[in-house]
Amino acid sequence: MELEKEIQQPRFRSEYQKLVLNIMFTANWLQLKQIQMLKPYGISPQQYNVLRILRGQHPKAATVSLLTERMLDKSSNASRLVEKLRVKKLVEREECPEDRRAVNVAITDSGLALLKTLDPIVEELEKSFLATDEAQVRQFNTLLDNMRDA
Image (cartoon, rainbow, N blue to C red; front, top):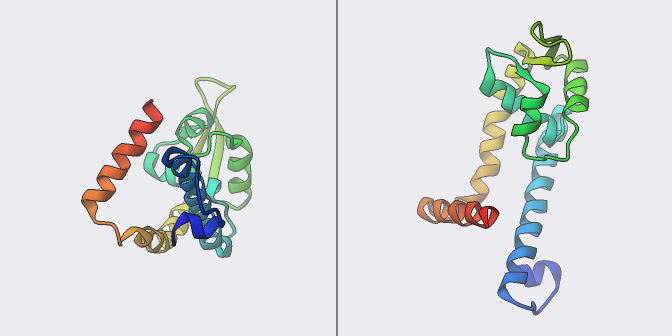
């Protein structure tokens, strides 16, 4: 559905204003879909992001600072997210032997199993974009990357 209809705004000051609002609206739409998808599994999108990063590091552990650097939501408190995941037995924390101030975090077998369960569900969300061909998706990704570089 067109943005004009979705937010009941017939005109925009410019196509640039519409683009900004359209990206914000779509990002919120995607986030709501992700929240709904993850809710039955008792994790938030930010916790899912931490697990996804840790799976990429597996079998090595990651520091909390590495998680913070790589997270999609830079305003999230990685330490708090790690603690919530630890309580759920999805990650393990241990002091870094080289630097006692640092904490190493590793995904557990339970965390890996949860992600394996979630993978096909996440793929369903990605299918929201199948109406767009792969060349357009590549172009769209390039445009978004360029916008952030400006």
